[in-house]
Each structure stands twice: as structure tokens, then as C-alpha cells.
Image 1 (tube, rainbow, N blue to C red):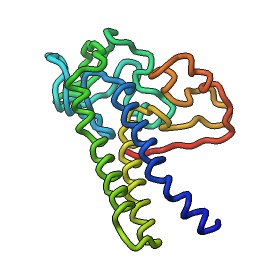
Image 2 (spheres, helix red, strand yellow; image 1 turned 30 degrees about the vertical axis):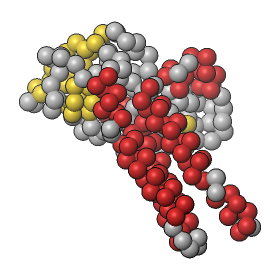
Image 3 (tube, rainbow, N blue to C red; image 1 turned 90 degrees about the vertical axis):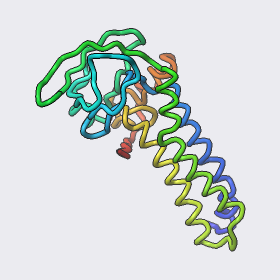
Image 4 (cartoon, rainbow, N blue to C red; image 1 turned 180 degrees about the horizontal axis):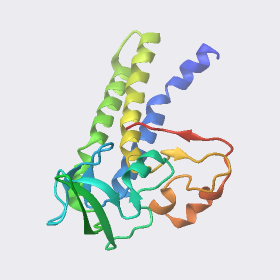
Length: 214
């Protein structure tokens, strides 16, 4: 590629990366599921509860959430977490507590102020910090050589890695693209934003991509 063309294209990199970062930030904040609790990505330990529930406790291990076996859910990138559950719906949680399996009822709460604040002060702020460092480097650091470009690219890519990784927890928003011809949701934007966009679910894109960032 012509170096002059590459240099001219590089000036758009901060704004392209910021646009992608903000898309994922607001998608995570507004459209990802709010089950009323938070959990770790691999061991499924409950780390926070955003309600006054007396049934679920911090430290419980999730085995099943509604129709989702957590082990199967983790291994299947095309399974959308609570994609068909509405606010107020009753679901069952199968948990492991002190070595004993328990089934408890749970109400899907949806977005709450406390849960939203927790998300804002989670990885999105770290992503914005890396983007800001990259932007300051873009504006102020000299000389503008290959090392300068590498430092900027590192910070922008790290910012996007963090923000896409947190949405990958629920398999939402371009976490995965189904293999050619597979009629499984292209992304949960269908259920998260508008059912009218579900035409994407049936499209044959002819390629596949999976991002496992957690």
C-alpha cells in the first residue's frame, strides 16, 4: 500500500475507533440483558445482586439460568443470554451453594439505576482511558514515525478489546457471526433493539467469525 495513502488514512483512525467504542458502550449499557445479578465469565460465581432478593446470594455458582445451562452457554457462541425474556418474567435458577444444588425462583428485573451505574464504572471506563491515551499520543507525541503509529494502534486496539470483551459475556452485539447458511441469530441486536432487524438472522453471509475475548 502507498505510504502516503496509509498516512492519510491514519488520521481517521481515532474517530473510527471512537465510533466503534461508543457503539459497544451504549449497546452494553442500554441493550444487553439486566438479569438482576452479575457473575464471573468462566466459573459463573455470583458477584453482585441488584435487588433485595433473599433467595440468591453472592458466592452462589450458577448452573442454569432459565433455559440456559451455563456450561453449554459458555461453549456455544450463538446462544444469546436471556434473549427472549421480558421484564417481570419469572425464571428458575439452578445454583450450587455449599456443595448443594438448589432451584430458586427469580424475577427478571431489567435495567435498574444501580446496575447501570455498575456497568458505567466497569470496563467501559477502562476502554475510554486507553482510547484517550491513544488520542493524546496522536495529538502530542513526536516524531510521527512507525513507533508513534504502533503506540496509537496499541491503545486503540486495547480499548476495543476491552469493550467488546464485556459484551461477549452475554454473546451480544457482534460477538459471533454464524457459519455460512446457519439460521441462528447474527447478533442479538435483533432482540436487543428491534425485532424488525431480524432479517439479519436469516442472511447467508458466506463467512464466519467468532470473538472469544473473555
